[in-house]
Length: 246
Image (cartoon, rainbow, N blue to C red; front, side, top):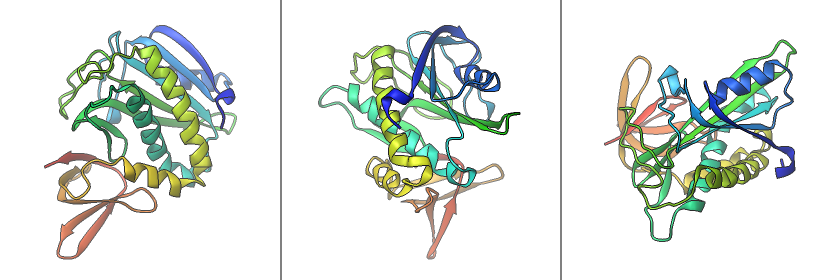
């Protein structure tokens, strides 16, 4: 996908940029459409967690229609993480702490989370599939959501405005989606993801819906699943979970 394939609508206060995208999809929006907002009144994170969304940060969602065959969509979060990481890295000053990715798609600066990414999708009445990539990036503010250490780009020395950061995100997402190529380019996306991964070789705990598992983070497999070495020659492959270092 090229930059010319995407549109952008900036808004003021909205309930949620993800919700706005889904509503437009139901009304027939053809997709490749970015919605940004100054503030979200009903922002949300993974598993329905509330996401504080005051003015000063970047709230952006991208609507895609029929982004890929359903069996290929599992690798999209990795491509999104690469795009967001590259956008943030582009506005960081020389000598700043490194920007890294925590599986599957949390973005960290010096081990502190600076971004939330939420992918949501639904089958439309038309038969098409709508998928929304939501990104909430801490530019000026670092609201504490209680799960991980947090930071903001401003606290790490970046002077970029939300609008400037979005310009980089607009470009980097187009590039990452082009490389991903509807799931056909997963190998190159995984290579880029691994090059930016944080914590490989470290002890981690993965919280699953029914239990927690600890072990050594061995990276990801060819499908993007987390590889967790739990000892005795056993490596578990995990498709979804919340990761904590240490």
